[in-house]
Image (cartoon, rainbow, N blue to C red; front, side, top):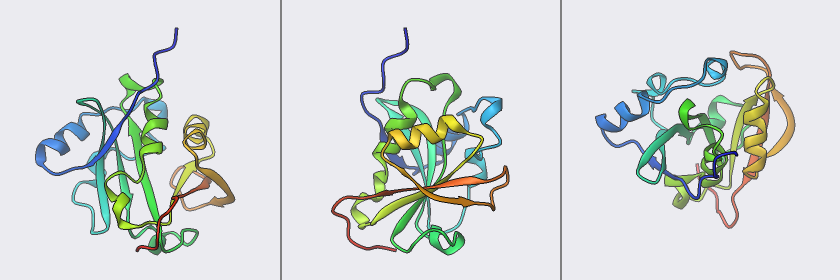
Length: 167
């Protein structure tokens, strides 16, 4: 019997050294390591990046980075689109609906900033992540990003209802 799906998750910006320790304790299966960076890669990252924990109840189950300046480094992204980078769910907690729940919870702590939409890429060789984002309401933009370190990536977008412009 498959595990019950996650009833809810919450995204919370990292605020302390302890938060970073929790994020860095998360593990990926070997087969997924080429598709996302470990949280330690984002430590000390530049302005505009908001590292976040994915929490299920009182437990940290994942990590992701929101990128306010995504459109400046990715020509396919538009001003007003918040970039989503590096989403990972701990290996021991996968297959419980937590990835879909986390993607549905976006943009989490930046909701009040008035973003018009979300934008991300997912590797063509990562069908599980692709299905996860589609289940969370993202749509394939019909274009490929060819600048990824592990090969071509689908560009996915999700409009945010009732949002004004930001950036």
